[in-house]
Structures are given as structure tokens and as C-alpha cells.
Image 1 (cartoon, rainbow, N blue to C red):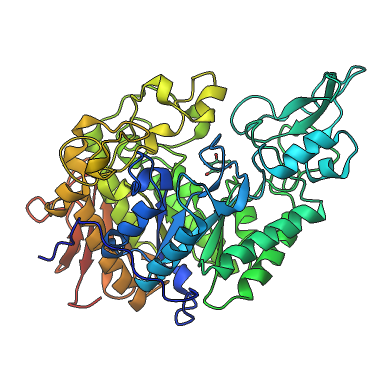
Image 2 (image 1 turned 120 degrees about the horizontal axis):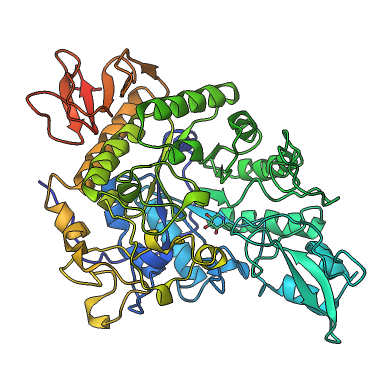
Length: 565
Ligand code: NOJ
């Protein structure tokens, strides 16, 4: 057994301008992409906040895990009013995370071990501290500076009525009133999220130019792609109508507007002008999967997150339906599907799958929903193999490979997420899936910060995470980490042999069984009892031990009939 060392690894020496290699232009079609929330991955500086130095030292872990790329949630200078999705400067690194030189070195070091970097671009809104917004506030109504945003007079004689009744994605209102230089109430400005995140006006040439420059800035530094935040929201209907009760396709005033496609065509041309297949990944929460697929036409985005699958409950019929709909919608545009179990916005799978209602929706998040973590963990293991076996790209949110649960008892005074506060505390918020990772040792900070620093992690880790540390799991073949490592290794071989092949096998309705090419079968048992596996099959990997040769409930097995798949 060859266990990788947990010791900090010395970052490599710089080796010149990084550029992803051109050898594998289709890398993104079946890549495994690991999402890093920098604040919570690993702390190199010892202040209790994760940072780039911490990530650089853990590159060996990521390589050993077997990922092809890492996606960083925003690492830019930011007041962190929304965990970094309030960017004050798109081309500098927040000092809490490090420096631009460190980011460049990280991109280079990662490439040297075969891992591409994806950065997060936040084009819909900006921090209220960004110089553009500050200038707009100072310049006053009618000024060119205000033209980059959505400033608007209020309704009624005194302008006290909001321009629209649009509802914020974070509950509550989408308009905030400004105060004029003389202290009188002024115009309103639009923010689909918090007031600290004013929306940009994508009809303005400065806004387009600035983002195109930002793309080039990061592509010039060797990143392999960008994840586009809130990608369906950028364009608004400038007549500012109310949201129709049942908006038809393209009729929503702030979502999925047809003009968006031109923006992404321009971005694609920029990405394609770089060597080494630089990819555009959209965060598109859209109910209509065919509208969703339009963004993946060959001159637009490369891929987008499959939130339909993420939101489904642990139910064979529901998951089968989602897989079918996904594959059907992606085929005509020849785009690869993506498979995502979680991210920094949603409830951790181990917790969600242990609940009676295991579907996900922001609107129904409630604190205190009971969960059975043993059941949830078992299902999360089965789901990990199910998703890793499907054709397309796979996203893993940091800590899911350790089976971390959602931390649901964080002290109220430590919570930061505006979703929690804007819902009046009804929504528990997203802090619970952002708790710093446990690396080693038996008590907090579990190796998250260097031992000698004596600092506490920015969010407290549960005391019982000792059994979930990387160190503990590396020594335990029954751990989630082992399962992930084996799965990613086999997945690589599988995708090399048959990247797109997929066909369902006949099975009971509560079993998901499919072939990937001639020699690989994946079987997930969502029924309450054990099931027989197909005849004469060799087991490559199983998410739970078989019982008398049968696959137990809530488990996945991968089977092959040859030595090589
Ligand atoms: C989606 C991001 O994933 C989320 O974390 C953020 O709060 C919103 N977009 C707003 O930027």
C-alpha cells in the first residue's frame, strides 16, 4: 500500500509562463473537477483562514485523489459580504488568501502535476466597494458613471416606490434607495442578491470590455477555464416589467434572456483564441432543460452544472428521469453532461440523503430538519459511484470525498451567510457546508492550520471530526476517501476506453443499472432489500460490502467481465 505523506510539500520552483498543454483538447468532456472554497480548504499562513499557500502545500493530496482540475470559488479582493461573490477587484487576490504572484505560482505548480485551474468569474454584480460603484454613487443621477449599473428613479411623486417588485435570490427586495449629496433620498439601484452586490448593466460597453479583459487576464496566466457565476442573470429587460405569473421562454425580465447568447459567443471566441482548450462553465439554474442546453451550443459555453440532478431526491425513478433528460438534452448540441452532488451553496449530500425528503431546493431549506447520517453516508457513497460512472464531467465539492456532514449547529453569532440573515433566520444559510476541512490529528483545528500557529479556524469544526480527517481515512480502506480514490482511478480508465457510451440495462424500477461500453456495468440499488448482481461478473468496486454475493440496499457496485475495462 502506498500512502501519500500528509507532510506539507514544498511548493515547486517557478518554471516560466504556464500554459495548459494542447495534447488533450477534449480534457473537459470527461474531467473530474474538484471545487476549492479557498477560505476553508487549508490554511498555510496560520491565521485560521484558508489560503493559497495552504492549497499549494496540498497539491500532492489532490493529485493523489486523482482530479484533473480545480475550480476556485472567488479568490479576488473582496469585502466578503457574500463569501467573495462581491468582487472589489477582479485581477487581484484578496490579501487574506495571498498575492497574485502566489496565484500564478499555484496555477503553475498545479499544471506541473497535471491539474488545470478554473477561476470563478462573477459578471452579474460587483462589490459595492468596487471603484465603479463608489464613483457612480458620488457622481449622482444621470451621470455616465451610473450608466454601468441599474440606477432608476422610484415610483410615485416622491420616488419612494421601488421601480419593480422583483424578489431577490436571497429573499427580500432587489432595490436599495441611495441618498443624494444634499442628504435627500435619491435614486434606487438594482441588486438581485444583497445591496452589497449592485447588478451591472450589460448593455454598457464598459461592462462588456472589462469582463473580456478579465477573461484574458486569467487566460494569460494559464488558467484552464472559468466558471461563470449566475450566468443566466446578466441581461435584464430594460423596460423593467414585473415578473409574469408564468413567464414563457425568454419572458422573465431578469433570467435567461435571449441576448445572453451573444455575450457567451464573444467569450467563447476569446477562450478559443488560447491554446490548450480553455473552457467556459456556466452556473445556470434553469427549469427548462432544453433552454439550458442552448447555452451549450458549440460556439457558446463548453459545459454547465447539472443542478437538475443535484436537486433530485434519493429515488430511482427521479434519478433515472434526470439522467435521461440530461443525456437527451445534451446530445443535439454535442455537449458533455456534468454530474454534481453538491457545492458551497447546498446541503452536504451525507446530510441531505439521510433526510426523509432528500431533494434539494433553496426555498425549502429549514434549520433542524432531522437526518440519519448513517443512512445519508451510505447513500452518498452509492451516489458518488453512480455519478462517477455516468458519461461526462464530474464535480466534487471539497470535503465530500471525506463524507463531511453539513454542520447544523454553528453558533448564530458566527454565521456569515447573507442568505440566512435576509430570510430572517428561516433559511439556515450556507455556512454549514463551508466549515474548514479536517486534515489530521484528533482535535480542532485538525491540521487545517499549522499546529504552531495556535489559531482557531474561522468557523469551528465539530469535535467528532477526528474520524473524518484525511489522515484517519488514508489508513482505512472502508473510508469515503478510499472509495473516491479508487473510483476516480477506475473512472479515468473507463473514460479512456468509452468516453460517451451509455445504455440502460433492464432492471427492477428501484435499481439503476447501465453499461458503459462492452465491459463495464454500474448497478445502484435504491430498493430496501439486497439484489442479485448480473451473472459471472467481477466486482471492480462497491460502495458497501456485498452480502452473500448480493448488493445491499442503498449501494452501488461496478462490475466488469475483463481484466481491463
Ligand atoms: C452563485 C454562487 O455560487 C453563490 O455562492 C453566490 O452567493 C451567488 N451566485 C451570487 O454571486
